[in-house]
Length: 451
Image 1 (spheres, rainbow, N blue to C red):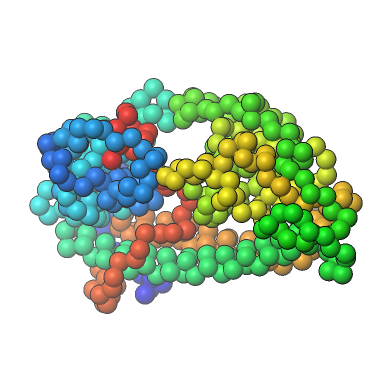
Image 2 (image 1 turned 45 degrees about the horizontal axis):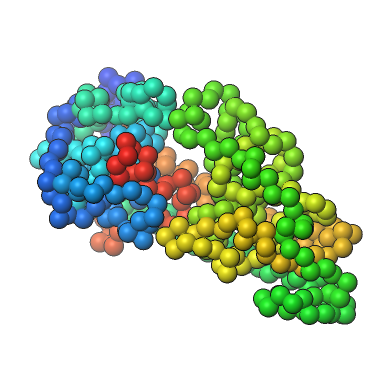
């Protein structure tokens, strides 16, 4: 059904350079003629809504209460009505917006746009998330540095948007919901295969770094309950004996500081890997990074033991370890196989302190055997790594296709009216589970208020 989509029969120039030609029967209009600003307060009994890059607008889960500050006076929060469009003024240019699923409250720093009759906010939410429109939003935003630019209501209402007939807006939303559901299911299926392949890969590595390569080698009790017997010639040690901790050299940079940088040459590491590029570096070495805090300590959705090489910067959310001896790849394998739960503190925000990390006991093979283990596990896992890489590329292509499809449909490059009319009724897809974690809720970055 997607492959059979065709352009509209007639087009006209929209008069908007970023948009180009639109279907001849579509209009263009200022956002201020499509939406009115809702600035009602004093509804403290309503649930709190949050806006994120990943989920759009949803009722806030208080399972993440430790991550955000809540204003004590909820009466200052803005009321948002089901069907309204709400956006994060500071992250609108990245797509932090969505349609409110229920009546609720949003941060005083957010904008609530009430659609006028004959306007389907769901269509405009999809339009505003397209690359070309977000570039327009970025240009219209105001601030000292890019990462602090805000799109206020006065700028938003002056922006121009294409306007299909309302029935056509609904058809576009219906088609995109269906297409996104199909693509999301395909992506999830591939993610499940990747998870199974990663489990197989980790099992191979775990067996090698805890049992060695020779199954017939003499064994001895390790004295570590979770580890059991180990090769007799291996040593039991603690991380503090195997690594120097360089945490005192960490320097966090906030988004304003990073936003003011221009060359952005060097990797900036956080708890789960590279999160940005910066102008300078703190380290020029091969070092091992372990998350200090965050849900990944428990969920293990991403690698925990990361080898950082060359010149880079590290913030204060990752422990920095320099091996005193041996192979850094082998030691990364060892640390990746550990279950850190017994050493984690904190419920709402899991934390692995330096003292607890460095107290962990591990089994260490001799240096020459470490190299052999690294080589052997690399050979054994190479087909799995190749398969994982191929599936990740396929997921990337599906995401690129989805992005292009949405942009083409909401800007009138493809006509989906007939396709939407033939669609069966379906339950809307769940929130995507495969998106990157840059999509965390963004309320903590808005003027000290959250939603």
